[in-house]
Image 1 (spheres, rainbow, N blue to C red):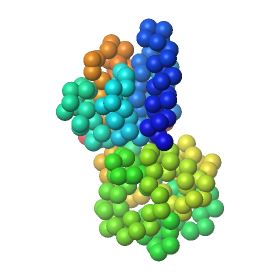
Image 2 (cartoon, one colour):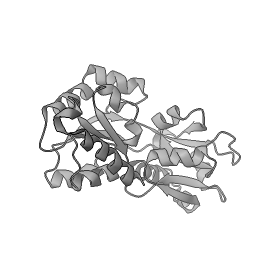
Image 3 (cartoon, rainbow, N blue to C red):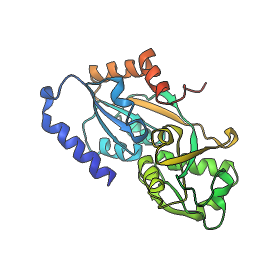
Length: 238
């Protein structure tokens, strides 16, 4: 479904036609960046989705100026094929547990995710938020929680949506997504001992365009970093 949505969005952009599209870049951005990516350049045409799915669109020939990924993994094959320039790290994040507003399962701690009967939703394999969540559970010694998974989603929005609708007792998402959904879900922190190293990468899509370079400069510059901090993203770790 996400791939279809991304293709549909791209079709709309393509329909605008080359120069008539405007001066802004076409930005493929991970779902968790959906609110902040347009703020970097209001003229940008932003297509959001799971990072792995957006990478597949680029491999299939979809036109984009710059790709903002929630992890390095979706960029590896693109880089090897010469489809993108060297990625640049521009932000970080943290994982949190989200539960429905009623929290009938009384999940408040990462250990609760392994309790029998708790219905857990995660990102699918290869989706950064899902891969990070599984790494977090492994760090916590809670591999048994994977037996409680009732749904695997194509992006972080899917995880939030399932929990908000009460179709699962809990999910693991980025802190920034929990923040934007605070009217629909409750969130609980995960100890730093169980936090994976989350890094967001920007890569200019070949052939490089001037508007892509301008977007990258804004993203990594003071104003772009301030916008990211304002949205809850963390500075690039050392």
